[in-house]
Amino acid sequence: MAGIHQSCCRRAVAPSYLFDPDKLTKLKSWNQIKHELGRLSLIARPLCSDDYHNGYLELLSQLTTVGTIDSTDFSRRFDEMRTINDSGSLDHYNIVVIEDTVARQIVGASTLFLEYKFIHQCAYRGRLEDVAVSDSYRGKNIGHLVVKIIVDLAHEIYHCYKLTLDCKDELVRFYAKNNFKPQSQMLGIRFDD
Ligand code: 16G
Image 1 (cartoon, protein in one colour):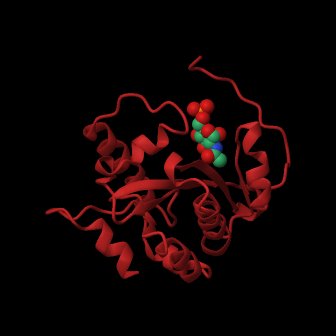
Image 2 (tube, rainbow, N blue to C red; image 1 turned 135 degrees about the vertical axis):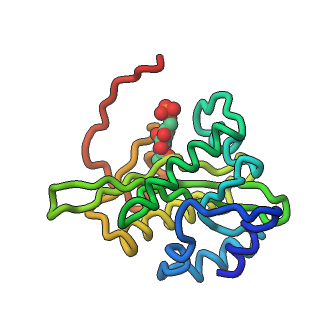
Image 3 (cartoon, rainbow, N blue to C red; image 1 turned 180 degrees about the horizontal axis):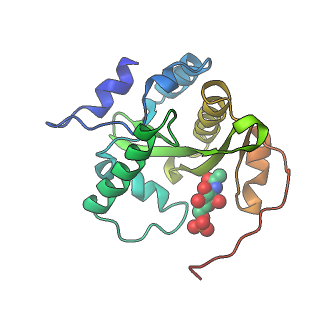
């Protein structure tokens, strides 16, 4: 727990978290995950309001097009997500980052987005989004750990009735190793082509 708080508070004005870090520390697997990451001088924590300066967008650019986002754009979007999180009984935007505490860079990330449903007794559906591990940190089990954090959050903390994702064909094997099974086809219309 201390590791999370120390890492996010090194600027004059303490940055804020997107969601309550205690949601992570309450996970049954937290100590194991913390230990595995700690051996590599890494920590897992919620996205912070100043992570624009810590390489979060550069990491996402290894996943897809990010565009030209300045720190004002970043802060505005962070605040919009935070306002939604603060407005209800649960956090809809759970962006988890893996930080290298020596390099002070974000090297991994994943997101749990929660959708309210009427079906299944007014259940929550979880979506695993924006999973990325920096090129130079691949092969260290970090991908498995960032996915596990989201799976455990969706299951243990939010009691989602299901958790789904979409991914490129070449990543299906990776997600299958992390307990995701093909369930239904994902179809889409792109408006940005
Ligand atoms: C992948 C991501 C999705 C992300 C999308 C971006 C996972 C599990 N899936 O599908 O979250 O939004 O790539 O690609 O991380 P796009 O720019 O083509 O939408």
